[in-house]
Length: 277
Ligand SMILES: O=C(O)CCC(=O)C(=O)O
Image 1 (cartoon, rainbow, N blue to C red):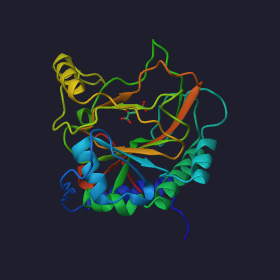
Image 2: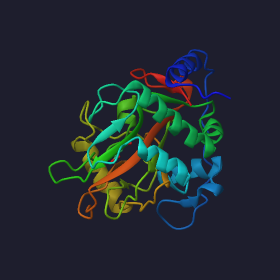
Image 3: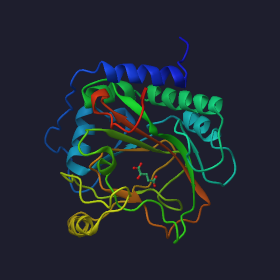
């Protein structure tokens, strides 16, 4: 079967949103994990129950070997071979060198093929209660140079602050290089935060009230920084408190990641354009 190109996926996503029934998200069973902290499992053991329980009780799930090596290598080819910042995705105006439309279409085809091979569309359909759509502004491959003290990456935030509250979305954040030892990973508060804390309007930064609440959360649930191999993924949602993991151990010149936020069609934030998976 011919793979659909990006324009066709955008049109299909818009049609899916237009005809979406009211979706119901999957509610986690009781917390099945022993001990504290983020649950971690091999991709072959990932199920909707585990995904929901991990996110809704612990804030995130670490999934080992979610993308196969041949997909990781192919995705990294789209970022080139230079240690420079670059973002490849359907949104215009990303930072970094301009990438032509054909190259973006090929890259997105490869990204969605990798997700398909990993069984994500079926899993996420059950989790979100409807067939997921990605969105134009939050679907990307990127290379980040080593953070500097003056540009440490993103601070603590919850993406619900930008999506307009609770939407039961899912972020698939996949390491394409090793992350967490000599390159940034994500820092995560390993617990469910039941609501969006205060953020400074229009920024990825908590406000004073949000920072006060974060401090209390970190006292009870210290930050975890998962160490990831290429193809390992972090799955989490818009309530998960996370940040670019702090510099300090960053000695490698850059890291590569793939990031895709998925939504049920009737919960796509208004400011962005849906893409069929
Ligand atoms: O890649 C990073 O360091 C931050 C990504 C992030 O915060 C997000 O995907 O919401």
